[in-house]
Amino acid sequence: MLRLLSVNFRGLTEHKTLLSLKFSTSSVMAKSKFEYVRNFELDDTCLRNCYIVVRLDGRNFHKFSEQHNFMKPNDNRALGLMSRSARSVMEELEDITIAYGQSDEFSFVFKRSTTWFKRRASKLMTHVTSQFSSSFVYFWKEYFAEQPLLYPPSFDGRVVLYPSNRNLRDYLSWRQADCHINNLYNTTFWTLVQEGGLTTTQAEERLSGTQAADKNEILFSEFNINYNNESSMHKKGTTLIWEKVNETTTKLIKRPNEGETEVTVTRTRKKVTSHSCDIIGDQFWEEHPDILESDQC
Image 1 (cartoon, rainbow, N blue to C red):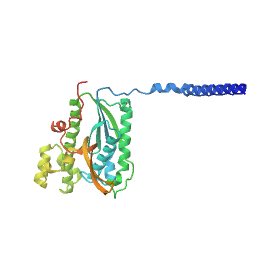
Image 2 (image 1 turned 90 degrees about the vertical axis):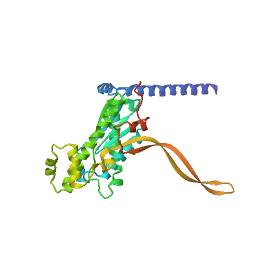
Image 3 (image 1 turned 120 degrees about the horizontal axis):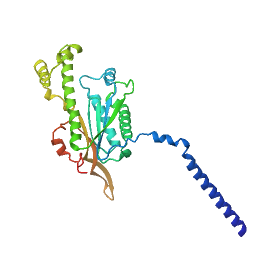
């Protein structure tokens, strides 16, 4: 009996050894002779201590907006959908500290200390682009209930690094200034066409060489439109940030000998909030000091 147990134990040990050799051999074999092709991959790790900005732009959106009957000069449905898609990106990638969008573009700012995807530019850009594009399609019906999506939209992306708070603020200021310039032109252009009876060619010729003051004068003197009263979202774009908000809910709690009692519960949590305000001046940044990280590295 003892000899039989000894033999069985020896057999079990040999079986374990064979299994161990098998797994070890498989592990070695996984590194095949083709493994060398990984050496061709580009090291695209973003420089440390820099804000990483991923900017998306709609590809051929002039055609896309025409075929999907976007209203001119601004379609609030489309702008709302862009903002909703951007919020989806921020909720997925919480290291995005601020995002700014206007027209068919959106910029996402990763905090300078982020380690998401090991700071690989290609990973960050493709993840942001795919999340935004899929969200744009997913939420389409919420904003364009009566307008079917005729074909999938596409967005291109780029990655830019900004080493200081001043550089980052200047970048966002540049995008907001661009929003104002484009919106003033488009508002005047489409007013000349829709209310002034001009063709698009005539409107373009009328505005050729004009300055901001000239466009404001056309709107006010010819159409009684004060550009300052136009929508802030159209003039200043949309800024998304994380903020702590209080959410109040009511719950029914059953207590002994008292039956059900309605209790109000307030909880604080971080949430993506939308703003259409000036981000060129200092006030916005003073009110939200946690967006930027210290320049002292």
